[in-house]
Image (cartoon, rainbow, N blue to C red; front, side, top):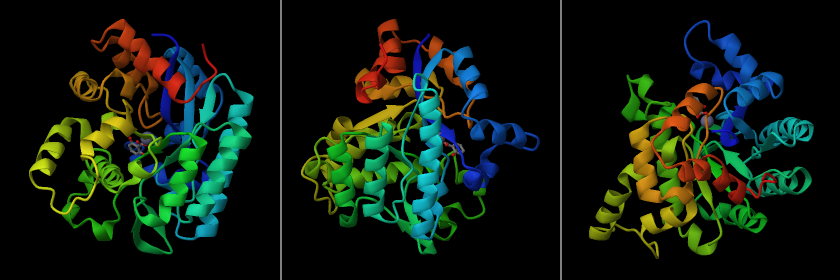
Length: 326
Ligand code: GRE
Ligand code: ZN
């Protein structure tokens, strides 16, 4: 399919590059990976051309800003990342847009930076790498707590989506992974971490306060679509302290979108499509952690109708982000 749009496509600053080293694949792959994630020009655009990808929404790598302990530094690094993406967008407005990196260590600073990026640069929302650390390494702040309501109010007023992207758990708080470091990242832990954060948002009353908020999850929904029926069924049976006005699944279905980033599997896609509906799914690659070709070759052939392929591969994103594409 030509004209595809992708939404979880990462860049790095020199100063955040090392955060991705351990995820770049085995020996010999680093140089290529580093070149690709730093590039916002020819190589990325050529890859998009070769794979029928017209438009890409850029974002900073993970965990980057969310792992910076000093708030002032977090504010500065966000700004530098957003400036770099804004330059690429200005140079190639028909090919790139961006999600703002945000210093969630300070909700007011995050609100200000998002507002600046949306108003000055036309950014399409924010992409945040899960919980934020702050001040001390052993910290993990989730955004369902009251301190973040004013931030969410800004997101809602700006009318842009918020992409909740994975990061790894803090080692000191991840006893279940002891002795099994391979479990902690993309194979499993990313989805566990990110899905819990998403469900915390659902259960916190956030969406009652801000009924227009829209959250995006990658990786085919970080396991949630597969389990949504059971989550709901068990919550109805035994709420165990849940105080939400509506069931978790109702919030999830109404407020969440899911992308195919890094999860190029027909069966998983089918499940997400059946559970959430074609309006809620969007194609994405997760470059350069994934190859654009693997994403595109899979998507172009996965068994759905051509109307759904166009909708999920393109028109849903045009609508959600109000993209200036035909
Ligand atoms: C991602 O950006 O989704 C990602 C990483 C690291 C490893 C795998 C992966 O940041 O998909
Ligand atoms: Zn990603």
